[in-house]
Length: 261
Image (tube, rainbow, N blue to C red; front, side):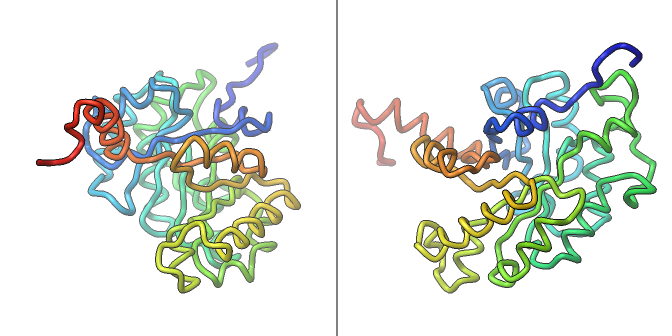
């Protein structure tokens, strides 16, 4: 692109400018719902392959259905392994979210899976991704520049390796998985327990020291604002189904119809 600026992921750009980004968690196979979410003001779609029935085929369909829409498709894969990262990337996602990254080796594996050689080990068969990528200058170099690698800290073991995980080249976001982390700490879902909040502060500190972005779930506007004030920038918003339920209750509550009776 002689004389022109190269395309940059709007999510990556906002994070570079220290602006928060929010992703709607997509747990259903509805392409219409995904497309509506992609135009509702979210920065990205968090395609949930770990805790929902969404399949690789659904990911491909959502990528196509949301092409050129404002929110970019990201995928949380069910395991931190190269083969599944390769498949969602080849389907055209703009970011991969890796669960249970508890060691520096897993962080390196996540980063390695999302870049082409010589930096990484990604295979070159990105058939769909190359046809729906928004950068007119081509896919491979642009993907290496723009795809985000997000690793989730959700085990007590990971807290002992935060510095090494955060220092891993190619990792962009260190995300606190407060739900599973609470279980790992023996708190069984108490996501706002002081021990969980202390761990989140440790993650935020490590991310800052190594020039990375820190993220966490945000279940409400008040929580998101509080976390932004702390320095978190990357947020998993509630699921599509939870948002539907909240909207339904907001409408039906004043009519006395909020309970299923």
